[in-house]
Image (cartoon, rainbow, N blue to C red; front, side, top):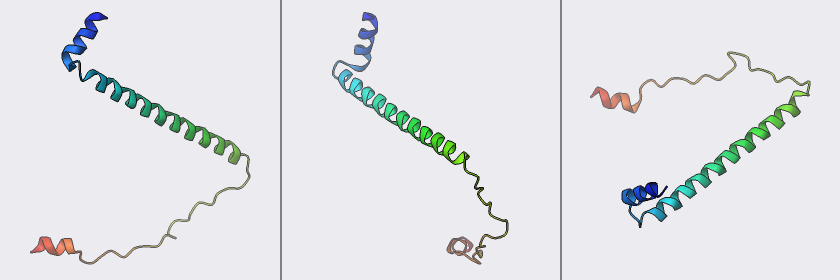
Length: 84
């Protein structure tokens, strides 16, 4: 244990160890917050699925060919720049 502490002091220097410990603690805290948020979102999704699975309503799927089609551009400004 003492050897490990000596190795850390030699690698990083005594004045950088508090900064390193602080940033490591902040990173761990942010990771835990993110993990808790993801777990909460998963729980909300599970609750939503169980409450909506009992309903008899079926969602209508969109029919093919009903989407509006966008006309392609005949010539873009990029094409005219590359042709010159």
